[in-house]
Length: 429
Image (tube, rainbow, N blue to C red; front, side, top):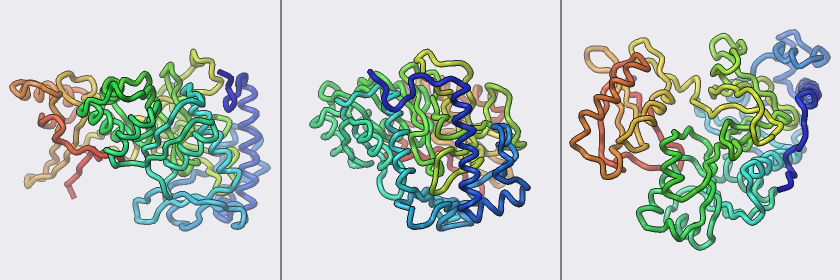
């Protein structure tokens, strides 16, 4: 298939040239148009003319989610207001949403980036794409739809929830691609199985966004839907929205669109670059964004870069799946634990289903207690629960250095959701 949105030939030298030109333009644009950036650059003693090489990126100060909240409602605005055509927002931890504005060019660029994602997943214009994510001020629904329409496939803007309607659409419209959170895809897959609809649908590909999905969950969704591929799509509102990259059918890492942004992987504590292949925080600098450019934005998402070139031939570099967030980490008895580590341990364990919860409590003795609730596999033997729980407890203790209790619960007794699943329940106050 001819690639329209993906450059066929792009050397590393050419990509570096695109990035340098984009970085220099972005710094000039932000300095001239944004009071916030101008003050920040002046305080750091750096001017646009100081950016001569890509290494000069490290001279620039960081931008954080707190900056967006402190400058609400129009943080980082870098163009005259009459050039703004849209806003999108994500939730803020202090109550104020992180609001980002878009020019017509920003919207257009985002659609091209997203179309490249569909192209990377090897969709065709004959595909029927059921979009099961939220619409409104969030970037998800409109991003998936605009990219689908730019690519030229058939969009079914179903939105989240309403399982009966979703299943009817899968059957009636013969949907070939589902775009959703991992939790929503699991919910759909389980209902397809429960209602005996697998032979009546035509789903071949599923695109996950918004939350981490274990290998076990991915395999379950593939099996229950009869899908051939599960793809991961990263993205965040601060950098356009979803569509900043996608893994190809080889599934050896997520190709990210390095001609639209620079991705640094930094130690979240020291903010120094991590060693090649090590996990660190994703820090973004946009190269073309007009309305609210992002310069060294600390996303808090954690991943690692994958060296080498993919067998698919894409000219774009790769990062691994997002393993979690630096601010999702919790501390139990002085030990740092990431939910993604618990997730990874559970995904290797046979005899359990994919849904789980992590509970943290502080009892009267003043100590912290960790409890993991995980579902027994479908039609599993309850008589094996004690042995299964003990095996998982030993693995968690060995790999995280934290002792905890594991409770095996009935299959499908934990809540399902069409949005992001809540995994951690911290009641320690």
